Amino acid sequence: MGVRFLKMAVIYIVLGIGIGIYMGATLNFALTSVHAHTNLFGWATLALCGFTYLRFPKAAASRLAQWHFWLQGTGLPIMLISLSFIANGYDQEWLSTIKRIGESVAGSGILVFAVNVFLNVKETNVAVKKGRLQKKGESRLINPAKQAAPRYNLTTLILFWCSLIVVSSLYLTIPLFPLFEDVFQISSSKAAWAGSAFSFAFAGGGLLFGGLSDRYGRKRLMISGLCLLAVSTPFIGTVHEFQWLIVLRVIQGLAASMFPPSVLAYAIEMFPTKKRVTILGFISTAFLMASIVGQIYSSTVILELSWRYVFYILGIVYFISFFLITLCVPKDIIQKPEGNFFSPLKRIGGIFKKKSLPFCYIISSTLFIALVGFFSTLGSYLSSAPFSLSHQEILWVRAAGIIGMLVSPFDGRLVARFGVKNVLCCGLILAGIGLGLVGAWENLAFLILASIVFAAGIAMALPALLSLIGTLAGELRASALSFHMFMLFIGASLGPIVSVYLTGIKGHVFTFEVLAGLLLLSTIVPFFIRLEKKETTTTSINPPNQTNVEHYH
Image (cartoon, rainbow, N blue to C red):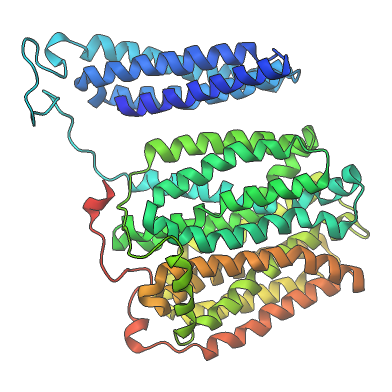
């Protein structure tokens, strides 16, 4: 526990020094109070608490230390973020309320620490026995805490959250396209590159970083990706020329591409067999929900603030998530594979020697061409006659799709009962029918229902496809999953471009029909995929060599 507090303290001293350098460089001292609170309440207080817990293990092992960690760890960022907005002139009542809540939560953590000190800090509980030196090989703890049991539920929640916010970056620019057209004086097709540039970088980076996680560790790659996102994302809000926005979106896409292949491999290796279907279902749900959550987030921010704050706030969210992954997710076992730095890329060629596996990637790209193309078209469709919806109303229509995506965590049960190919075909058919019906009747309630059906079909097909690829790939599972992510986001890159092109030719309804036709046409592909009997009875996400639960620690 003491180590956790020290790591958290170091994060705050880095942040505090960064704020100080910023104020000195710009001569803008509006953040002086934030700077002081970061250094005092963040760095100094947390470091002292950390050293106390290291010195007194009984206090560190108590439940009070856990409460202290979460109360101060949650309340302090809320307080600092809201104080930053107030210091920059956004002194609104709701911001002041949030600041007071953060202060109260963080202050409660200090009170819990005080109680813990008076109850558990005693001379007899010091880490090293008084009066003699520690012998070589002797434990530093007189009263060592029992080794904690694996916290699968907490880890699942953190990985779900981080997967959601990382992939959301792909979709958050979709509602911003009209704003970019006005701000930068560009065409709609050029504005769409704000999404496509990220997607191409995301897809290409995934091929490289999926293999690098074998060499350097899954958790290290996830932490590195979140750290780079926390640094690069706020800079997007500072640009005044569109070409620089594209450059920064490429950098952001490369940083984000470190996360998905690493988190999938981490889930496969670090979770016991009976929990793997559940964790992969949650991660797949996060990837899908990101397509809506990212749009809802950016749409909500631009209703109250400017588009630049979409990236400022998201940078802070990435910083907090970096902190969560670093401190709360167990370290994985680094495999140290043979070969050089580029060996993972060379192994990709073996994917195409596997029977039936290349057919799966046709579906991978088609799913996200349809998904991103649908959302790129939906906004302009609903804002025009006969719907003429406001920005806020369109936001709620987009949000309805989340209902259909809740199917994804239960996909494992459907696969176990009906077979992976059958579930994949049903998902594609359901998605195609839902998307085809979106423009069939100019009735808002019917459109929302059709979009839910479409989202449910995508949510059913994607985990089944992931399962099928894992089964067919065998020992090339890591490379196969990385190439799957590559093809998904190639599809996501093409989605906005296809949407703008088709809408310009024959309008919105024609675009929906073409995208639906692509999905229905892809239902032919599973008939070319052959599964051996042995493969159909094996859970696709079980690696050849089972990872013991002990590796989780």
